[in-house]
Amino acid sequence: MSHDHDHDELALRAAALEAVLVDKGLLTTDQIDAIVERYERDLGPQNGARVVARAWVDADYRERLLADGAAAIGELGYGGFEGDTMVVVENTPEVHNVVVCTLCSCYPWPVLGLPPTWYKSPAYRARVVGEPRAVLREFGLDLPTETEVRVWDSTSEVRYLVLPERPAGTEDMSEDELAALVTRDSMIGTGLASSPT
Amino acid sequence: MSPVDPDVASPDAAAAPPRANGELVFAEPWESRAFGVAVALHDAGIVDFEAFRARLIDEIGEGERAHEDAGAYRYYERWLTALERTLLAERLVDDAGLDAARRAITRDWEHDHGH
Image 1: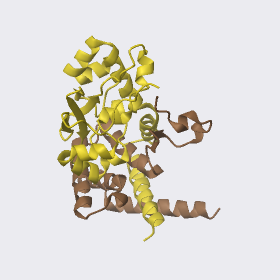
Image 2 (image 1 turned 180 degrees about the vertical axis):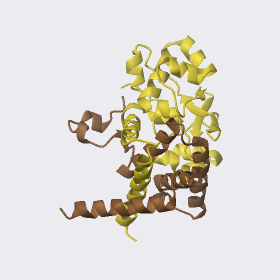
Image 3 (image 1 turned 90 degrees about the horizontal axis):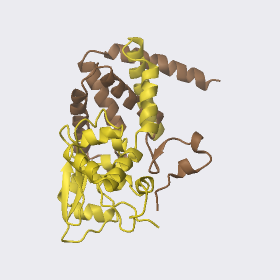
């Protein structure tokens, strides 16, 4: 069976499922289009980056974010499905946090969008719990041995967001400039925020 | 240095498929439809997303027990199967209806190819 044939078969199954639901009046094509467009264009790590940058410049906001993630994220207008219960974990010189979903692919959609392929891969999900330092090294992140690594498993209703450390040399940067340093991987914990150049 | 999305930066950005950090959000159009149907059913209160998620976890576990390697790992295939199983179990669709829709769509696609 060829690769193309497999994909035709999957495309056919997806199209048939949609057609039956639309025929029954349970959904409309427009509803599905609107959701796809929202996830392709509006939701993504640019939202989480704004949350992180705000926390870096506003100590009160940072406190609220760590105390009740979903409420503080909601202050910036982000929230909803798969983001109702958010726990924000803060990186410090002593502690590095990294997020996984060992059972499937739970991920904070409102602030990070849909997960990258590697986040959904069996290898990442299985290995990051048992050998986080080795996995992080493969991402190019070699942490000092004295840094404690904490792995957060998103298997319940809780979704995690890592608050990365603010890079050195950014004291004079604006919130917008700071947001541009916040990478997706730094909010999953497989990377750090970028350094200014 | 800020991460620059190459597609946002390029003049062809409008025509390029959506990407996040350089990676396609959906690799194939059918993946986006399977995703959109599941979320739309949740939004409309028709399907309990936790029931769907439980089946998705089952499906992903099946794939791993079958030793699907990372290269062959097709997340949205598992997603689609979990969605079909959920809708069949909830009797929102049935096999006869799905078969009929597949036959009709196959005829349309073959017709399109003929022109």
